[in-house]
Length: 378
DNA sequence: ATGTCC
Image 1 (cartoon, rainbow, N blue to C red):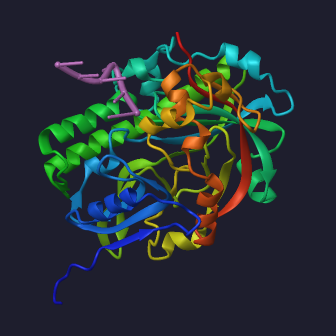
Image 2: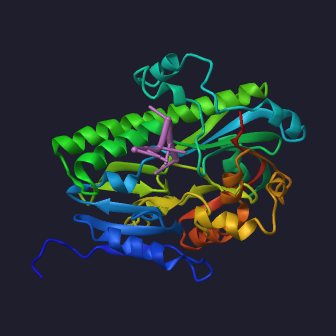
Image 3: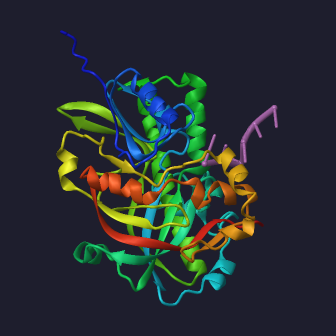
């Protein structure tokens, strides 16, 4: 007693239905012990990362931790309404027109200038999706639960929607590498020159990631002779300042979507439904129980290195090019096709239900992936 | 996650 430090609050938002590996919870607890951390919250998609778990949010006072954000600073999801009609699916024809690995033919410097970013900032990667769990996807509206809110957002059954999941590519990677090279996993003292310098680069990577998702949408949709209207763009790998009980804290999100920035899509795997959800207003002011954050997806069930071994005896790569929901998958990479198989992910329905039960969200609409683009071999 | 690591 007599200490100003209060006990760190560690919480995992998950029901008994939701399997969460012990290692991920251990990582959450370990991370919560970092100096200054006041709250560590595991989302229902919590899974193990390297040191820091993915699907988690951390609040800290006095110290800020770039390593908790990871290398893909600004990674997030954007949703666009397209001009493609849901009843006129031309999946094979569209698929043949898509190639997003090559550098964009347009003027990247001009594009970056629109976001007040230097023209030579990682410009050759601008407009490319990247690897891992990143994707570009066309989605149909399967079911609308809240017609008024959906209507206000521009969500209608007649249109297809475009979902981009990508980040800051080599830029964020370089920023983390520079930080780790100088400070390792150590935090930076709030207000220090080093912290301020990191945040400046972090914010630039955030802007770059938004510019990147915008360009991905532009490239993808213009290849299909369409255009898009952006509905939202939200990052799930970030560190941002918050005023909490009159004091400043740093909110680190590592694979955690914001619950304080309006409606968002929480996607399942390429073979399952995605959910358009509205964060409940109450939880924004309600004692930060969820660290102002939500699950950013279904969460991995198997680590990448396990996926092929578990699936290759039963499935050929070709078996994955059409999903159980009738969606077309473009993934011309043998490792990735297994790593991103729906079987490698947890049940998105349980992840969503856990957040509904925790009174964090309500479901506005259910979306169905019809065309999932990962990588096209050149 | 990464114009990937030698």
